Length: 517
Image (cartoon, rainbow, N blue to C red; front, top):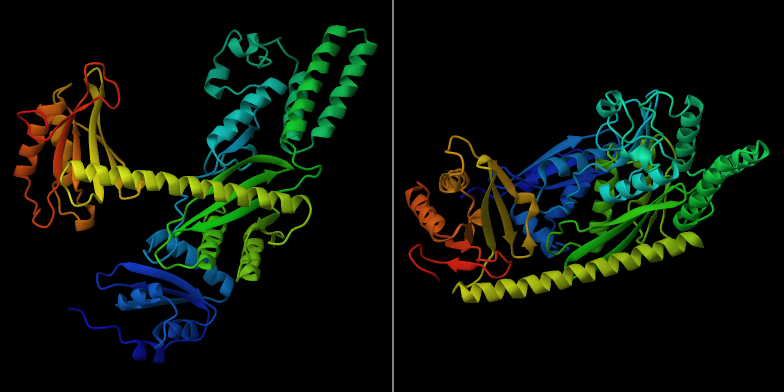
């Protein structure tokens, strides 16, 4: 048994400078990361006789070691804290699982520029617009732009190798710059300029230029062109009226907060150039006993400081909560962006309505999440009853797929007590087997998955094997040959066979390989 942490000796040599501290348990795992303006004062607060919360009390009991990193300023400490949280994912910190980069619209700098969806680093030359909350919002916008301003969206490899226009040209969704003579350089450049202005929020400027073009076409008695431009004007006006939320060119993020039953939802509304680009609900992982203030504070820091490279920071952030470290966070964001970023929690007028909308969406999303979770808990309890188990904390399910016997892949999906655990889903490329041999493929994935020591919490209560009696028999054989101790917990293996009509819900379950269960 390891010796208790000697807090008195540790605190006696501690500095009062700003910095970051990392707390470790007896196994050497980082269990908490924090930052402080005064390290000595902050860390001493953990070891007082009267501890404020049950969560802190549990945390302190598990401390075996503390490391500190001194920084020049509190702002540096804040940035380092969130980098460490992302790196170590400590179990006593609030964790935002938001590693995906945000999609943008990319307008290339080619001789005939193209529009495309973009994620990740901005290496290619051109302009980037966004961020959008998800790829669906980007694709919807790209389809809309294609109808309004018919510039190309094809890959450069396709564009360079065409000798005649594609279907997009035939349905008036592209001007066909890939084929000489279909569109003049001037006309194509004009449409690209319109796209640039539209994505920059300068819709009225687009409309003014189109109206001038239409009038010029009429004066030249080119009524066909005037009619085409008139239709384009009507389309732009229709979209503008539908998308604008204000008459200005606001760049805002609006964050609504809802908290119930230990689950937090933060709903973010993205507004760029006065247009709503979309919204997204976030459910950070919240350790038991955590106050809502800490949840919002940590979410805000992780969302903007960790993800600053993946998204365009707005000029203003409206928040449905009074942040304790609002000034420090604002200074850190300004330093990162190189410009002023305001954080408001008591806006008026239109901004107050945006905040109310975000708050309403957060409450609805949280209610939906709790309802789904409650339903899942009921289903899990019923399944445990049917399988004669006390409870089910973890299930893993395996399936084999291939293309005509080739490129075999095994998939594993995982459920815990709250539903799908997508961060632990896995795909395994299967090699070295006879093409189409699903038994060998399943044997390989089970050996790879369970042929090593597992953390007791990661050992499933139930393992579902797709394939019926034969696959189940093979799986039982594999588990019997594995050199792994399952003394404390042994998974229940169940085979699943699809019915004759292959309809969901009509599968047959096998508990033993030689008969139906």
